[in-house]
Image 1 (cartoon, helix red, strand yellow):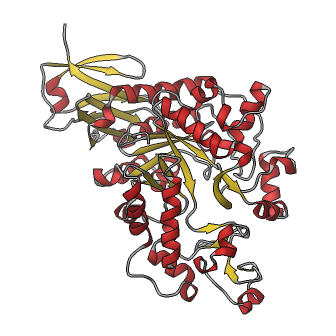
Image 2 (cartoon, rainbow, N blue to C red; image 1 turned 90 degrees about the vertical axis):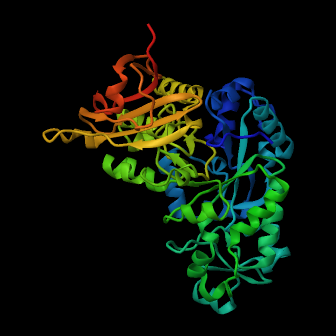
Image 3 (cartoon, one colour; image 1 turned 135 degrees about the horizontal axis):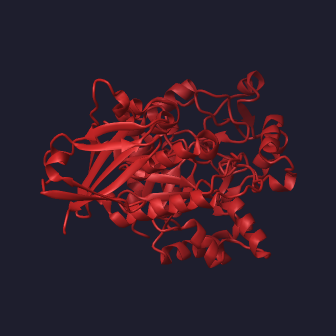
Length: 494
């Protein structure tokens, strides 16, 4: 198992799409076991600690047939890829038939080879786990109907879209409490002791082939959420919640295994307490895209220990592409924010080159788009320099820009410091479309030297300022729209 840093940088890769494009470039069949070196290089730039190979498990043929017959899904597929064909529709990676690497991707041998290739580079491997539901043709459906939320023949007649009659039992279709049931999956019962034990066993087996799991919609299995969603169908809630026992059992066998929760509804803290290393920070995503810098600053005022257990991102397979939702200059500013905060960082393959198509996960082909090589160079330098600096191994503190009565532009600046064995660093980002000025007082316990050299680790720009200015009135900054400083601070030497 590859040892991951305390705050890993993760790159999500749509495995089927990526392999298809590698095949097209090389002109030969390619599965996970024989991906060429340059293709691995492309998804493991310096500063990436782990790759999340999204969608490696065996997809459901029955689930795919349901998707092919769904008019709304077909319309979404055509919007994304106008010339889409049935051969390009692989089915949903979250409609899992079995947790075995799909044969079309190279099977278990190919997955093992991919992990070995990443391990040689010091890169960890993350895979998906879908705790809430399975495909209707999963072996569990016939072998273990007791694992599922059950219904009756009357339920099927009353709500045929919400229940599935397998012939042997009536099972509820998967859902969350705010949307109609998903037609291609059946619902596992989080209150069932046998299901909890089976989940722990399955995750233990998955832990033999990867370094961590990203658990889809993890909050749906929490006792209070599950009870609200399923009511009498779930039966009485156990005294203990779902995740603490499952995670503990898996970690008995795999102590270093990473657990990442896709989480919403402000349940991140609760899931951290139940055993997850990291939970999605959807709140930060929404504030960066749609709210003011002050709103972002308030979010970052949370306890540092809590923030170190969050996953920061600007896009993933569930969200629109950042190149479509953000102006290019704002995207760069937001990327600097994401890259220099505490917590895990999640990037999405294609984000660095400004791909714009939000591809439905059912598809294994995306339209051709011209890559933005300049944006890729920016992101790769950002990741590399932040990693090289070691700043995120130190102590993080949110700072408070100060302005003047006739100039409120300081409110548009975000600032924080890092201090530790790697040195002292100051990050200031103008999260607005106009120039902004402020003074940034550094923490009082920062050492005051006669003169401080400040070097921007992204562009090499160098400044010299009296130490008394930094710890007294604060460093004066004047940043253009969407500009930023990522400064290394050290005593000036002649």
